[in-house]
Length: 162
Image (cartoon, rainbow, N blue to C red; front, side, top):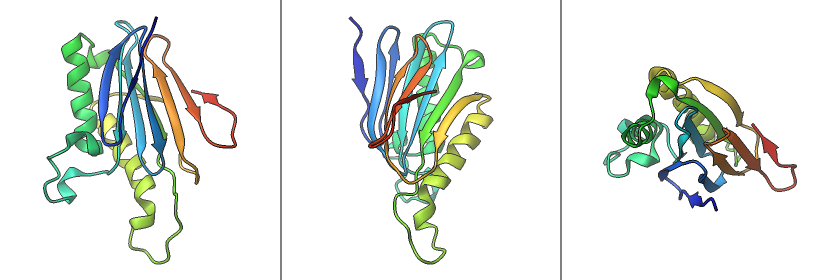
């Protein structure tokens, strides 16, 4: 029987097939699912903010940030036997949950999270195979490294698989 491992907010977890990983409540946060299709090793990071260097004491929770969380997820997967050269990713989330007046950038945190996630994956040479990002609704995701299926659920919408 396979286990679905829960990933909290600003958290990351790895798993080996047939297990999967899930996270709830991706609003402006981004869920980054990475797998090695040969070893069936995968993982999921729940990214809250784009850049650890922009926050004082940003290194206290490395899973919170796109720049440090994705790197840590990849390292943990490599320790389990995954090869970076084979890794592929899928991403979801990064919604604009609240409309703000002005150009403070606060309202665009979802967009900035998606951009930072894409930049980090590009830097690590991990291609993004599919994404379900943006819009104005939250998502819950379940990722299965065995198949690469990334199930995305949102209130009032049909479940999608990317």
